[in-house]
Length: 381
Image (cartoon, rainbow, N blue to C red):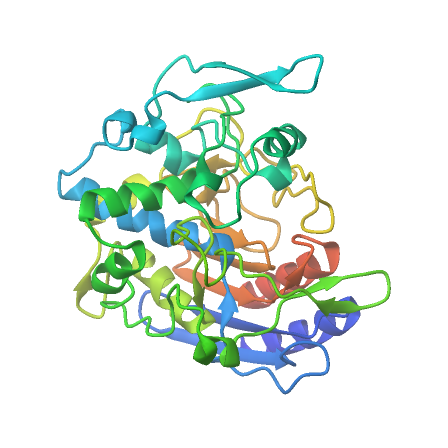
C-alpha cells in the first residue's frame, strides 16, 4: 500500500503543480501507512510527517463529537430550542432579499434552531463566501473576521427546510462553551484531543506553531503564491472556531478517525458511547447534502464530491449513499478543509484515510486528482 500511495502522490502532485502532501491510512487496530511527499510550500524544505496544517473545516467533526459528549451527559437535547441557551439564537431572522435601496429585508423564521439542525447544516446558516446574498448583507452589517459579531448572520432558509453549508458548527462551539463554562479548546484538550494523544492539535497560533505550520498558498495564473490567512481568525479572534479554527497534523487526525472506527474509543480512552457513534453515522437529513456553490472562486470552486449520487449527512459527517468510484464503501463518513485537506472513515472496510495539502482554491481539479489517486492506492483499485 505504501508504495502505491507514494507513486500516486508523486505523480499527481507533480502533474498538478502542488508542492506536497502528507497522507495517513489506518484501521481500528493501527496506523497502516504514513508518508510525506514533496515540499513544505513552493521551493520549501521537504515536507515532514509531523508538519502542521490548518485543518479548517475538518475541525467540524471534532467539534461535533465535543457537543455529543454533552448530549450524552444529558446537558442538552438534540432537538432543544437553542434560543433558551444562547440568546443570540432566540429570534432567528431569515434574509428575504433587498429593498429598492439595496438594504436587507428579513422576516422571523418559522421555527427555532436546534442542535440537530446545527450538526446537520439544516439550521439555515450559510457562509458569506458561498452566498452573494450574505455578502451583500455584510456590506450593510460590517464585522471583523473572528469577532463574535461576525456570527450574527441572518438565515438563508427556515430551520430544517434546506441543507446549507455555513457557520452552524461555529455555533456548535458556542453551545459547548456555554454548557461547559470552558473555552472550546480547553474542552477538546480535556475530553478529546488529550485522551486521544492528539498533542499537536489545537487553536494556538503562536510563534512556535507558525514555525511548524505548512504555509498556505493560493493559485494564480502563473504560480502558487503566499496567502497568509488563518481560518480561525488569527491571534485577535474573539472565539475559537468550531467550524474551522484547528491546526494539527495528519497523524493526529488519524487518531480521531480511528476512534470513530472503534465506535468511540481508542487505546483505552472512551470518547463517546458506541450508540452515539452509530447515531452520528446515520443519515439525518431528507435532502441531498454536500453540494457547495461558490461566491468566491479564488477561494473555492463549486464542489460535489460525489456527483453521481445524492449524499446524506449525519451528526457531523457527509455520508455517501452508494459505494464511491475509488474504493470506499457506501455509508462511509467524510469531509474536508478549505485548504485542500480531506478525510474519510469507512467502517465497512475498517479503513480510515487522511490527506493534507495547504493551498487554495479548495476542490480544484488538480487537488481532487491527488485525492482520487490516493483513495485508489489505499484500496488497490
